[in-house]
Image (tube, rainbow, N blue to C red; front, side):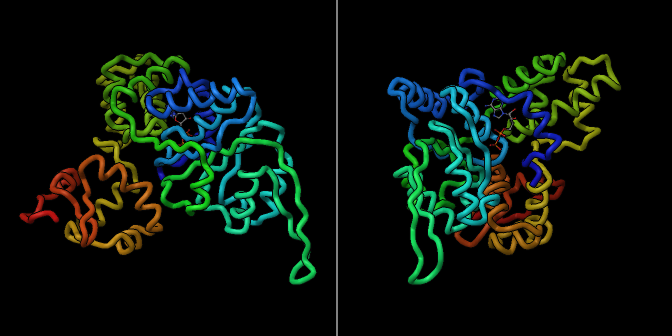
Length: 331
Ligand code: ADP
């Protein structure tokens, strides 16, 4: 999925990650709530409640997990739902945690069921029962787990099971960033990278960043290359504009998956309505990916609507892809 990071990009991103809540741009509400919660926990000298962060990729969930550990001055252990295939994988991680440590589980909704059930008791009572053997002879051995804080990330909180959701004391939903917030992200990144970026250049890049800091930083990299190779190194409006044209960056910031979904909807299904599963199959993705990764931004950009009969492309979607909108009523 295009908004996800490659290994090379992760290394680049590591240098741009905000290190403190104060450096973290936007998401004011979540930031304020977290800062109060962390201050309370620090005051009591105890780990804070478990934290669930939901929202599309690239909006800062991993960064926030790192900041939580940083602000609590405790170590951080990173893993992901798909990496925990068996209960034993989770037991190994949990029993190795240092007291107070932050455990970050990305894509927590994809954790295997037996491991998930173990996680419940670890979150609630800081212990896990390891079952040895099978059938009537099986014995459960309780193991203590050091008090820790779980930070779970998911593209949609609704994907979690009820018991899992109930065990998080604090939940924050991250939303797409406004253009002026993305300008602030870009200004900060440009400073760290030593790139000269004019306010107009930043506005141009921000407008094509799909409300997503990860994409803003990615575009800044492309624009910087262009400025250094084809101009005098300064990212002005003209330089940004020319660079983004060379790299075929969508004027609205749509990424590959967004465009694939919208193009299928418009060209293959005449604008819809079409069911989510059919639409997902036609672009070779899981329905969950289309729904959680592409749709939130398409909805927000006013290019797609959900109706009782399925997904429908708006007239703006037709125009954006260079087609004449059909004369039809939506809905
Ligand atoms: P997620 O875990 O939600 O996919 P990340 O935390 O990995 O997102 O964020 C991707 C990149 O975007 C980070 O490396 C960071 O540089 C940048 N970023 C995300 N959120 C912010 C923010 N609020 N302020 C500044 N930079 C951010």
